[in-house]
Amino acid sequence: MSIIDTIKNAISSGVSSVGSSGDSVLGIDIGTSTIKVVQLKKHKGQAILETYGEIALGPYIDTEIGRVTRLQPQDLANALIDLMKEANVTAKDVGISIPFASSLTSVVEFPDVGDSKLKQMIPLEARKYIPVPINEVMLDWVIIPKDPIEQEWRRSQGEEGKTNNDKVEVLLVAIHNEVLNNYQTIVSTANLNVGFYELEIFSTIRSSLGHGIAPVMIVDIGASATKVYIVERGIVRISHLINIGSQEMTLALTRAFNWNFEHSERMKREHGIRDGYSGEDIDTHKKITDILLSTLGRIFAEVNRVLLMYEKKYGKDVSRVVLSGGGANLPGMSALVKKEVPVEVELADPFSKIVAPAFLDQVLDEVGPEFAVAIGAALRKLKM
Ligand SMILES: Nc1ncnc2c1ncn2[C@@H]1O[C@H](COP(=O)(O)OP(=O)(O)OP(=O)(O)O)[C@@H](O)[C@H]1O
Ligand SMILES: [Mg+2]
Image (cartoon, helix red, strand yellow):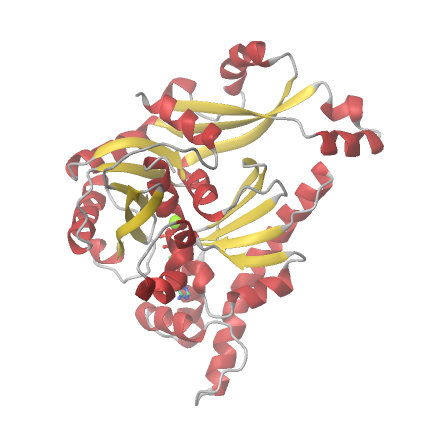
């Protein structure tokens, strides 16, 4: 199967399909601060967790755990090999998620000339929206089906002719060949068989959202950046990258307290922004909280801007926000987000889609948001 076919499947399959496979599969998420892997096996129609693990990338360039890194494919392959050894990974068949930041993703309006004409038109027109030569990227797209409720709302706004009835929205995704080549170096060095590459957005949707039709916002707080997606009927309607991630909170602590990175990272995870701290040094706790809140305030101002933009453009309210990524694990995060955004908030719980031993329940709950991408990739490889 060619890579372009597999990316297309990723986009259009969206949430789930039923298939069969008796063998173990591995989902891989190569983030900027850690690699995450999840090995699953299908048994009696259920996805069974066989093993999972993560490894920090900082030490591979002689820097601290938690640091954002830009590693060469060979170093990433070495880290992946170490992680697979540590986690006793046995699967060779893998699905890999590609970071949103390595893609060019946009929703573009086309004249509604019918599906077959659109299929000819999109690859030709797409070059206008992609800032690199089209022969340097793998291009894919999906036509976003029209929503009768939205049409009705537009009619009521008197916008019918202007924006919609004669227009159709298309999600365009382009991935640079060089990015794919780097991934191919990693998997061949690690001696793995790659079944597909898919954008991390689609992995997260599969692992962290149900089948509802109401618009949902996913906020993935990674180390380097925060990614915001609005998903409607399983389809990505808006995607946005905020160039502030969880590492920025650690760096803010290093500056404010003159602590080193390692200590700041530990203090961030221990203190977080929760209320009701009863430890000894209440003033330090308060100062840490204030500093973390100031970074989070910048992130959520932009999250709210995306929410408003969506609601204004499509006349629909986002029903809830799902938080994923390691940064979502900051103590007190959900409570804060409930105050910051005007809709329901929950932490992603991707392990709930798979069967795991009961004694792991608590720890899987805690690490869940961080594994949303790797689990989503593994579920697709399992055809769940
Ligand atoms: N319990 C915790 N409390 C606060 N922050 C945490 C916690 N656990 C992890 N993090 C933070 O989450 C970040 C790592 O999250 P994640 O693994 O999702 O990032 P990544 O995928 O490597 O980054 P990116 O998606 O930006 O490439 C780090 O900045 C780390 O400090
Ligand atoms: Mg990530």
